[in-house]
Amino acid sequence: MLSESLIAKLRGAESVCVLTGAGISAESGVPTFRGEDGLWKKFKPEELANFDAFISNPDLVWEWYAYRRRIIQEVKPNPGHHALVELEKRIPDFTLVTQNVDNLHRRAGSNHILELHGNIERSYCIDCRTFDSDIDVKELKGVPRCKKCGGLIRPDVVWFGEILPLAVLSEAVSAASRCDIFFSVGTSAIVYPAASLPYTALEHGAYVVQINREHTDLSLSAHETMLGKAGDILPQLVEALDKHPRGGV
Ligand code: BJW
Ligand code: ZN
Image (cartoon, rainbow, N blue to C red; front, side, top):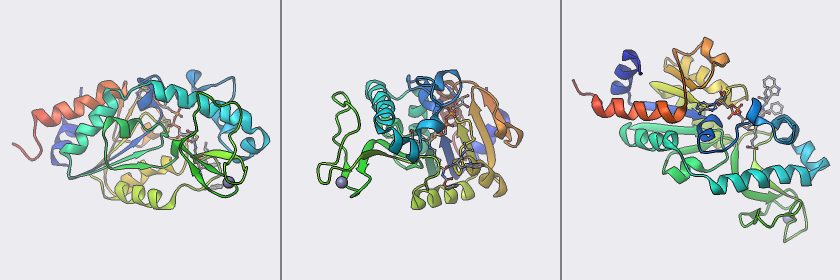
């Protein structure tokens, strides 16, 4: 059930910014990072998603990424992803900022997507920076090597301690600063700088709504936390807009 104030804000919104995390893909069958289903072979994401882990055990880190890429290739976008495609069609200025590297928003059909943490389907050589998008993870045994220089190939994702793509981050900050409504969807909201975006939106006067299966630190500051599955709640936003069209009486 959407609140009356959210319905009213949605009807009048010119600008909406949505931040998504692993929770939106959970209903497609992609494991989240944290919590019970976030552990892979007992490793925490912090232990694998960093450059030092890659250098000391590149085969292990690649095994994790290859495992995740195989899952992603087999799953489909879910009603949560599709609802954001529909929302984009109905809001004049709509920005989708995602921490996910799984391509499911693009596969669903979203257009204006800012990928803060890169994309798991791209890879590059750590020595000569040549990009490679043809790595067949089904055949992969151990870390792939660069065809040009023999260097180690890494996934084109942002690991802990690494700087996010600056132009992408700056566009995300700008979207969070000008939006009327900010949605934080399916993220534990603990990894910075992504986790600061809802606070940027709050500082600039946006109405901040969290959609998550459980409370997070953001619950203390958000105007609303809607507890439940993104795939159930996001379609309700589209339904509400269609029932009470924007700007209508
Ligand atoms: C559902 C659901 C359903 C389930 N419906 N909901 C101390 C203080 C502040 C900052 C730092 C600090 N020490 C270090 C830092 C910086 C660090 C950081 O933030 N660390 C924190 C952990 C403390 N950040 C960085 O290092 C970043 N870079 C940076 O800051 O550069 C500047 C700098 C450089 C050097 C030194 C210091 C600063 C880079 C961060 C990169 C994060 N990378 C990863 C891996 C990406 C590649 C990959 O995919 O492998 O990004 S880590 C991982 O976490 C991944 C995710 O995008 C990210 C966020 O996770 P997310 O999406 O929130 O998933 P979960 O699993 O945590 O949560 C899922 C949620 O969904 C849960 O809440 C569920 O309830 C919910 N859910 N089903 C709705 N159906
Ligand atoms: Zn190379």
